[in-house]
Image 1: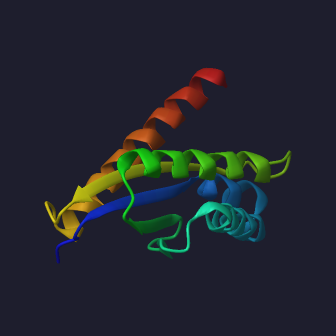
Image 2 (image 1 turned 60 degrees about the vertical axis):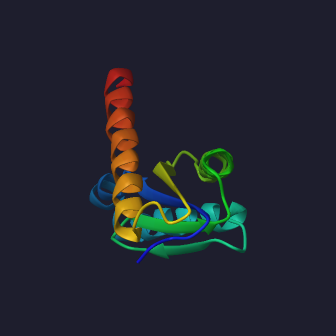
Length: 133
């Protein structure tokens, strides 16, 4: 399947879900996932589609969205996560963006590219967190 025009594909992965489940219980893990979903929904334009594709992964497709617009959107989502964090729950998400213009890549290629970018951000955040601890 090819994506037409300009599409932004965004992958999101909830940080610290396993740790939250293990230390505070699954009820808090569920609250963490709901906070992430609410933060994404608060800024995601109507034209975009978001779906949960794994335990803590969310996949978004934003038609007619450039890389620059997708980066602004992700920044707004990150700000929402900070607003939803407190002493009990740290709401943190790693994001990856891939853009496709005029069907230059398949859906699978765009998904994989966004997933790889998200994974790089997730690994970098874990290194940053270890250096602080």
